[in-house]
Length: 291
Image (cartoon, rainbow, N blue to C red; front, side, top):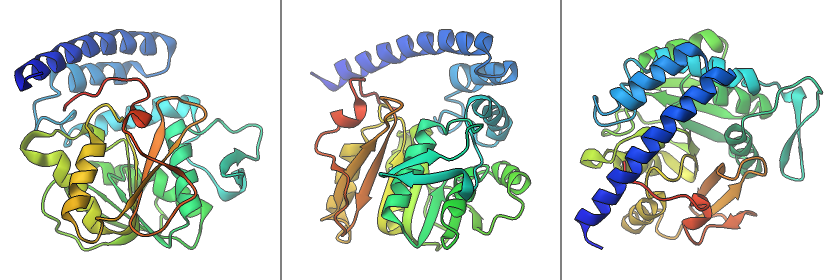
C-alpha cells in the first residue's frame, strides 16, 4: 500500500472518528458525564480548532479553561485525590479500604500500581497539570522525591490551588523542545499527554527522546495507544541511544477497562510484568492512526 493510500485511509478514519466523537460528546453531556461547558469547549478545541496551534489537540495557552471542566467531570465518577489510608496494595492491585470512596479512574489506578511495583526513589511527571498524580503518589510513598513539568503556566496555577502544600519541584518547560531544565529522575512518566502532541516537525518523537534523556532507569506511559505508533518510535529511540539500547519493554493491562494499559520501559532491571512483544497488545483491536 502506498503512502498516499495510507494517508487517504487515515483521513477517512479521522472523519469517522470525528463524527463518532460528536455523538459521544452529546451522549456524555446529556448523561451528565461531562459538564455543558466542557461540551462546548470540547467542540471548540477538538473538532473546530484542534489544528490551530502546532497541530496538537489543544491550544495549550487556553487549555486550562478546558482542564478545569475536565476535572469536574472526572471527579463526578472517580476519586481524584487520595490519602495513604484510603488504599492498600493487595496482590499488586490498589484496593480501596473505605466503602464511600469513588473508584479511581482506570488510567490513574494502573499508573499508581505500576509505579508502586517498581518502587523508585524519584519520579518526574511530564505534563503534571493540576498535580493530582504527584500528590497521590507522594501519599502512597512519602519518601519519594517528586518533580513535574508542564508547558502551561495556567496549568501550574491550578496545581498551586489544588495542592498548595505539595512538596515537589515544579518547572515550566515544553517537552517537545530542547531541554531547558536538568531534573533527571529514576522514573519519568506521562498520563494522557503524548497522545495529544502532533507528529508534525517531529514534535511527538522529540518529546519521547527528551523523556529518555530525563529518565535514569524507567519510563512509564499511560496513553491512548491509537494516536501514535509508540512501539515503533520507542524502538527507534532505543536503537540510537547507547544507554537504552538493551532496555526491556513491559505492560500492564487494566482489569476494569480493555483500552487502559501502562507501557513500562526498564533500562536494566527485569520486572515482574508481562513483556510487550507486539503493539497489538496495547491497541486491543483498535486501528492505529497518525497524528
